[in-house]
Image 1 (cartoon, helix red, strand yellow):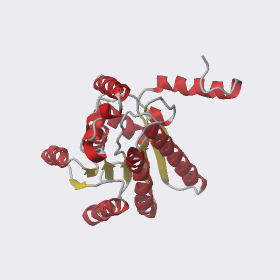
Image 2 (tube, helix red, strand yellow):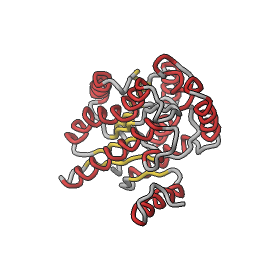
Image 3 (cartoon, helix red, strand yellow):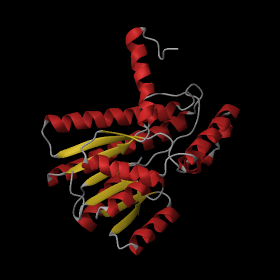
Image 4 (cartoon, one colour):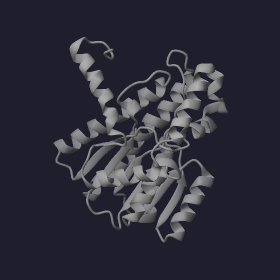
Amino acid sequence: MKDFSGRVAVVTGGASGIGLGMCRAFARRGMKLVIADLDESALAAALEEFSTAGVAAIGQSCDVSQLDAVQALADRTMEEFGAVHVLCNNAGVGIPTSARKMKLADWKWIIDVDLWGPIYGLHVFLPLIEAQGEGHVNATSSMAGLISSQMMGAYNVAKHGVVALMAATERELRAKKSPVTASVLCPGPINTNISRHSVEYRPGQAKPKADGPTSGKLASSIQAALEEGMPPDEVGELVAESIAGDKFWILTHPRWAKGVQKQLDALVEDQTLTRA
C-alpha cells in the first residue's frame, strides 16, 4: 500500500504507546483514524490531540478479546468513514509469570487479548478490506514471538501465535494474488506503559508480586528496560514506512534477530534449544 492520504486506519490499543505512535505516523500521512482502547482518559486525550491538529479521528472503547466488541468497532468505522484501509491489531497485555505455575485465568486472559484479539480483528476487518480491493493488515507480536524467554509463558505462546497467524495470512493473500498485504511487528523494548496497564486490567487486579518474588523482580526489570526503550513515535514511523515498502517483518531491534539465528543453528546442529 503506497497511498495513505485520505485512507482510513483502525488501530487497537491506539490511545497510548506503540498504538498512539502508529496513529501519529498515519495522521502525518493524511489518514483518517479510528482509535480503539479501553483507557477512556487516554482515548479522550488522543482524540483531543488529533482534533487540535485537524485530523479526522474517532474513538471507541473496545475489548479486543470480545468478538462482538470488535464487530462493533468495524460497524462504527464503516458508519463514520465508509471504508477501512489499514488495520493494526496492536492491543496487548502481559504479566511476568512462570509457565509452570501460572493461573489458568491469567493464561486465558493473556491469550484472549493477545491472540484472539488479532484473530477477531482479521475475521471481522479483512473481508471489508479485501472488498475494497486495496489495503493492509498488521498485528503487533514481539521478539517474544520469535524467541521464548523464561517467566513469560502465556505471553510467549500468544505472540508466537500472532507471528504464525500473520505469516499464514500473508502467504494466503499472495497465493490468491490479493492486492491486500500483511505484516507483523516484532518490537524489542519500547518506552510504553504496557506492564503497568496490564496490572491495572488483569482480572482481579492482582499484582505480579502475588505470583512470587521472582515475578515481582522480573516485572520491575522489564519496566525499567521499557523506560529506556525506543520511543513509540519512532515505532509508528517504522510501521508506516514498512507498510509503504511492502515489508512483512517489522523489527525495531533487528540485531536481536541474531538470537533467532542461534536458536535455528542449535535446531539443525544438535537439536538443543540453544547452543552454549
